[in-house]
Amino acid sequence: MRNFEMIRELLARNFKLKYSIKGILRNCYIKKMQKKSLTELMAYDAQLYENRHGVPLDWNNLQSYSEKMQWEKIFDHDTRKVVLSDKYLVREWVAKRIGDAYLIPLIGVWDNVSEIDFSTLPRQFVLKTNCASGDVIIVRDKSELTEKTIRGYRAKLDYYLHMKFGYNTCELHYNDISPKIIAEELIDSGDVDLQDYKFICFDGKAYYCWVDTGRYHVHKRNVYNMDWELQDWYQYSYGVSDTPIPRPENYEKMVRIAETLAAGFSHVRVDLYNVRGQIYFGEMTFTNSSGFERIEPAEADYMLGNLWKIDTSIPVQK
Image 1 (cartoon, rainbow, N blue to C red):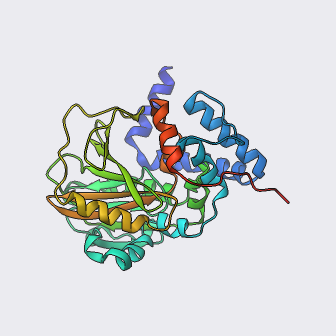
Image 2 (image 1 turned 30 degrees about the horizontal axis):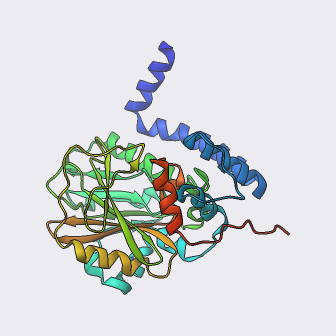
Image 3 (image 1 turned 90 degrees about the vertical axis):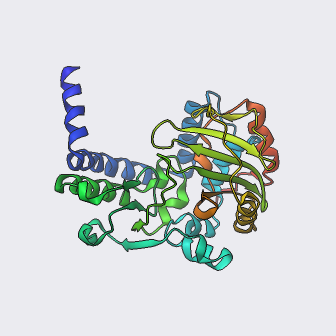
């Protein structure tokens, strides 16, 4: 046990070593996943689902939101999902529909970590890949970065750049994104973490807004209907904030933007930010939490499932 703790402490101090080891393990995992047949992939996803929800997944009777999400991940091959899940390419698509005033200003885009020249970046910025999740690096004061820290950031970004995120939880469309690294301006709301407004849309209509607070510290998620009434259901992993969240300025405009972007899709989550009335686009997500975040009570999961009008028949394999 002591040796294990020593290794963990070493990796916590050395990002480059940590992500080098993770990269080796990840490559083995990717090769294993690439060999799976469709039947094996479905069985693997069903096991992940059961591990998170505590109940088996019946591929022939998908009714709840979380259950239908499993079909969406593996059998919906709409190529638009690839473009709109790409955090870089989606910018052009969004600009055409609502204008580029809602885009967070872009600082740079690179194909690999060696191309990033930190000396040219501003004092504050955000780094992330366009093809993964959990990879965000927030820099509030570049002058505080050491060479070791920068090497660690490069190692982290390089890992996520090549990780084939779609294999994590069978969100396969992410694997078709051409990996890039992007830098955006840091949007500062004055709070520790920027509040994230996630609009759950079905057939181009927004039904609920999930508000994330304390994302990088004490992550909570409140669920509101379109009249900004707090709902009595929630996602189990997060819980509800003890502090009331006021209806944001320009809220009706946010709803219109979300519905404009959601038009033409049976389901999509549209994420927006709002800083003192200035609205920014965040991202679009078609496989919300991979369907693995338990919604409680379970009746709410089925309520959302009823709103999602898709045929979940399993295609006949040739």
